[in-house]
Length: 133
Image (tube, rainbow, N blue to C red; front, top):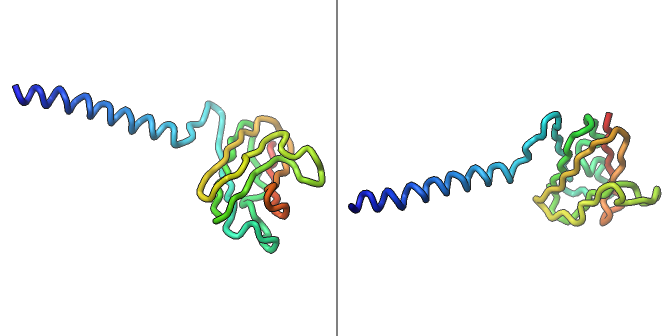
């Protein structure tokens, strides 16, 4: 009797835990859609300093249409990834990460071809580019 009762408790818990692990794995990783690829850009340490040559690395980044690009803030301060450059106007009309805390990410899917400049609204010397072809 005791064995059956323990079995009735342990099996559902084990199955629930297994399902939770699978779901966590799915939602914590990007699952590519058919034909879609992914690429990564690092917001480098010290990137807010004007002396940093490549605050976003790699930049320029060349990808195919349908690629999801994920920027990771590897710096110790807040940053943004915002389409456009301040002097060109139309900043943030295509994408805007809002504030990205250290260690956090932002992802945007580039579905059209073209050259896309972006910058950090908090640090105007930080600039990058994605080329989609």
